[in-house]
Length: 415
Length: 202
Image (cartoon, rainbow over all chains, first blue to last red; front, side, top):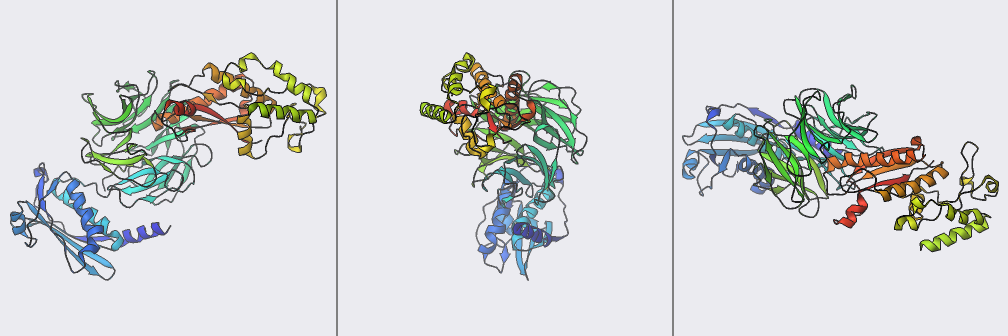
């Protein structure tokens, strides 16, 4: 509870006071931009802002896919000369000033002629320093390519570190991990609402498996009674109040819809085979899912009304966990290759797919809101942990270490 | 060990003046129940005639009520639900059904196990049953939850065809969330692909 109060307090005390002036054309931003980032100018000991602020900021910028960080020669002030000396197009000039309980951070992006392409002031308390770092990184990405950065996005997941699997949240870089659900019972498979405010998930707290909705601070929990079995793999529609989920009658699992207020249950699939794992297309018009109707679990796509069912996966004897890229052009899924599960990405236009091979079993991919990253779970270390990689498989890092962790779901909105 | 238990049971039955019917019933067990090694060690399910019913001297919680059909307990089953479940599994009264990989149809030995379980359940209608569907770790989590649901319901329906009242039974799927054997080989996987029968009290 204390933790939530602290979060609320820090969010409330973080305001950005700003004028953004940009003379850059967003369309210019196709290439990687070299940027010099000297240490912030400050009267505070540098260690006090390095860990909570400067390190996450430079990590974000380095991971943005927009910027490359240039090595900096020593003893040059943060201005146009530094940009030239480090062969960079921009210098990010930062100043951190303490004001009572707050930190005031000024960020300016200067080009090689000394013109400011971006300038903004941020104010927040000490616990909000990493949040300010992510905001600055987001603003820089938006300045350069016109699209929001993903550095304030969140990854929901299930962790058993409290004794039971419960729903947890973390920042995109694995920081700030906090427990959201408190059932003291197996609780799994969280999925974000499109506005990033709520999650739907499954808990076994009543001895049956039931769907629950909870807000991102852990409050407002409601159960969605369906009268059906399973109530698993729930996922919010990106465009309506519908939730797709797996329900079952007498051992026949099918894809169903229910409104987020628990009303209007509709059955979308009617086969006698097992159907599972629905996932909406980003425009909300289609749903991918897994079906055993061919004899093995394979990925299918149907219209959101349950019509026009098409099988799309044909390789391997077990495919599951399909999830659409934010632009709707690709599907990532879990695919059994040579006896082990791997993340596979299929182009929905060409229907060609590629495997991102890794050690161990690799399952449950989820796309970052900008489509550049995939988080997934792997047991390569001997236990289930969540990892993040670029869509080409590079820059792989573990995001979790405590207990076992699985079922990652990346928030849908970038900010 | 099983033989010791069995001998002990029969001994108890003597004290309870139930020796003859309890041990005789061994011969009445259907051959279908004992084709496997597991089933062969199962103590026989006692059958009784109504005339011996009056001689039952079991503790109060096993005393028959008027609303229930005739039933017999030749032994003292624990009242604690965890101990009760351990006891009925150890004594083979309730036997889990095991499945093949990615299958929810019942192999012959699974049918035999459920037949044994159905016989005991019909004689002990005071207990309700939870059937848990489980899968091995080689599938994916979400599909396995659905597969476990189908396994649990397949077992439930088979028990119903054998005469167990469907209203006494409910199902839940744990998929691969709660393996019985945490190992990563076929021995462990085979144990984890099951419909697990759990008594849930009266």
